[in-house]
Amino acid sequence: MVRKQDIKILTELLDLKDVKVISHRIHDGIGMILQTKSKKAYSTCPRCGTKSHRLHQNHRYIVKDLPFGEKPVFLEINRRQFKCDECKKPFSEKLDFVSQKRTYTKRLADKIIQDVIENDIHSVADKGIVTTEEIERMLKDASEELSDFKPDFIKRLGIDEIALVKGKGNYCAVLIDLDTSKLITLLSGRTQEVVKKTLIEWGTEVLEQIEEVSIDLWVGYKNVVTELMPNAQVVADRFHVMTQINQELDRQRKQEKRNLEELVKKAQSSSEKAEHEKVLAGLKNSKYVRVT
Ligand SMILES: [Zn+2]
Image (cartoon, rainbow, N blue to C red; front, side, top):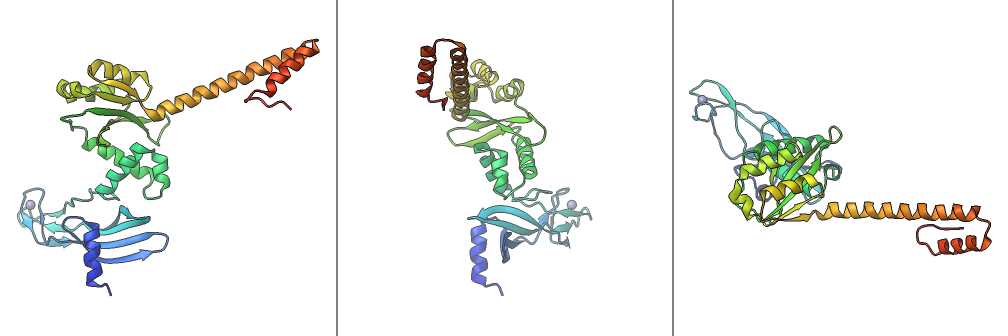
């Protein structure tokens, strides 16, 4: 028996407009499943706009939602079919919080995309909430939904890339408002042309307001910024800079090791014992090569 009070609290926690929780259960190793119901007894026909109360069929299925603490949350939803009195045809109701043919809520997709921008697809998928396929679907949907969006004002812009899973070297560029950490748009590719085309669509008024652009060290993006955003200062993306610095340090270490090895070889072929010892002494003081 489900207590009324529990249902009221769960509905409030769920916080989805026009939706109430009607039961809940917890499965070990799976998570919490909330059975939900629409508060509205009707739906509007997408063809003619007539409200219909005539229920034709129930269509119940489970979607993923934002986790509750560490616990995954699933919603059992009912996307009802109504019959329109005008058209005489059945139609599926539109639900604000979950798109048709999707296995997750819109707000979960928003959260995952934000996580992917801050991390990467694999580390987000490793959390076990959504699969890499679902993440790619979310990114594709977001890129389609945001494709016509033009910001009014941006002060600090971030241009980053997301590596997609399928196919090697498959990347897409993302444009981020760095002051709000929100995704502005997600492009279908990452080439200079793709990025440039989108930025041009924003218009010079928006572009001239941009004061700072954070990009990775790929020169292509820098050229676009210099060309289109006259007032922007280019800042190298900190994560990429660290990667490059580490690579450079590695390269230097390897080079130093090679130099020392050459010195050892030379010393060994030399008949002068003193010089040999001198080199060995020098090696012992080196941080990078251990001489035994
Ligand atoms: Zn109709």
